[in-house]
Image (cartoon, rainbow, N blue to C red; front, side):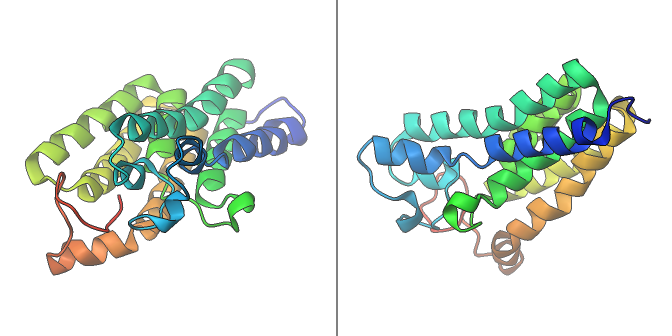
Length: 206
């Protein structure tokens, strides 16, 4: 599908907007505002909700999870409604990359699961809900947050080829290996049998 918009509007502007929104380090900002210090010095050092949970503040972790998903959901949905699937795909890619590589933090960001699920919900509520349901299912079956994340986004990406326009499906699919690479330590621990289960205290991050 070819967008009738100039390439700067179809690709560049949505990608930049998505990147800037995605690069907001909510986990770091919330923990600092709550007087909990620098989340990068806690547990795994990750800025995502899983590491925020290690501060013992569940409400703060839930807020981080919601905001990290929202910063992917909002630009993907907005550009999808305004200009269609091509600009939406660009915004979605920008949001995930911004979360993973925020320039304000030396390009050392989160692992992208919440933001990726957010873009999936923004591009297709059906694919997003299927991915969320799969995460809950795998988490209940295996008790590994990281494994649930890796499997659910993979199957969600496959489903996207049936329920979304190809530009959106392509971006959703391309983001999968990026998220997997960011989870390389978790994958190693899963293979070694040393990954912590949900509710078990550990320095691993999902």
